[in-house]
Amino acid sequence: MKSYYRLMLGKRSVFAAECFEGVFIGVDFQIDEDLSRKFPDDWRSFNKTYVPVFLTGHTDKSRVAAGLACGALWTLGKGLVEGDIVLCPDGMGQYRAGEVTGSYYYAPGTHLPHRRRVKWLGQSIARAAMSEALQNSTGSIGTISNITVHGPEIETLLRADAPVLAVIAADPVIEDPIAFAMEKHLEAFLAVNWAQTELGREFTIFEEDGERIGLQYATDAGPIDILAISKDKKRLLVVELKRGRVSDVVVGQALRYMGYVKEQIAEPDQTVEGAIIALEDDKKTRWALAMVPNVSFYRYEIKFKLVKT
Image (cartoon, rainbow, N blue to C red; front, side):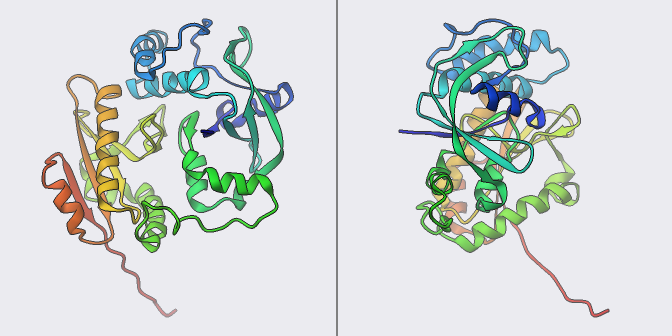
């Protein structure tokens, strides 16, 4: 089945024009070797081999950065298959869509030496035309993110012969579309006001080189809403917003992300915890979490008032 990915062509899309002209996509990460025969079927095996290689050449980087880099390399080299669609921002508010047409190849001495051939499609997609959910997915931190869940909307946008339809209500894992919409705004609020929240007293949103990379943190297990680390660096925290989803889905996702963080990111002396934030005091979620002591539940409240001036 066809998959869909968002791919950055260099930081801030600096190499996008070169890729569009050269009909390829690529990544770098300063791993200077041909990986043609070195991509196992399992990304975990690749990361196990190449995370130490990356860290040896980047002593200032964390395991988080190493995991992101190696995961992106594996996805480009092995995870993408011919026929998959990539959306690549051009740096000017538009996304070019390309169909993967060739296998991995190495182009030493170039800006993005780890490459795949693509056929760039004629249509561009304006970011403003995307649903909020797709905007958030395509705007996530990281070089490559899997956005296959938005495949129907992307195909509609690429056809350019039909209006963009609301897809939230048709999603079988969304039981409350209103809460879904509200909790997208909650994510932005938490990002700005994290330090003033109860969680912010103990944890900070993960940063790398002064840049917050813990918001919509892309992983091969899916995008984590917020990845945070305790101020003593001993605890990692996976934060998931319920987004109107059915309880079993959100709890399962949180546990899956926690497992990924434990295996791929956490240092041996670090523990991994989880937190789920929802609009309502959800009994179903609490029942599901009763057997998972390292995941906490938080309910948020919305208050506002009008002030005459």
